[in-house]
Length: 179
Image (cartoon, rainbow, N blue to C red; front, side, top):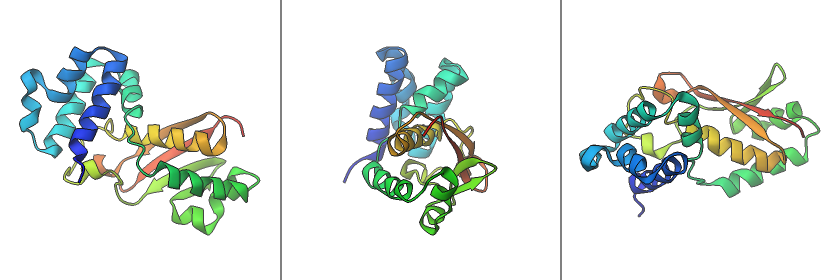
């Protein structure tokens, strides 16, 4: 059995270190003098995001979290998206199949969306409410990588809603730059 907290600590540590240095990464992930090790997973998620947001501006924080995606299930999801793309001539066709809709994809006003009716993050299972949407930016990073591979072009992903931050669904806007 793997320890999801240890995996998340490592992923966040490396992403923060990539934007700053090892000392800042230690402080954000483990707290001052390592005090965060005594926190429950739910407490740790929110306190880590608070420490991250207090050290970096919004754009850098978002960039760090987008680089924190775990990659879990990427190959299967990529194969699924490629199957959908193989039968579609445009984004509307891509998102309008029954399989695409069942996976949470939909197309509205010339924009592709991906929604989840429940939070897909196992690390947030014990978290009742996030203070901000910062934690969820890893999902935008994951989706960016996934859709760029599937579409073969650069993609922008915008997090619009998050269940754990109080919204009724998780919702992302997927914007391919050229296909």
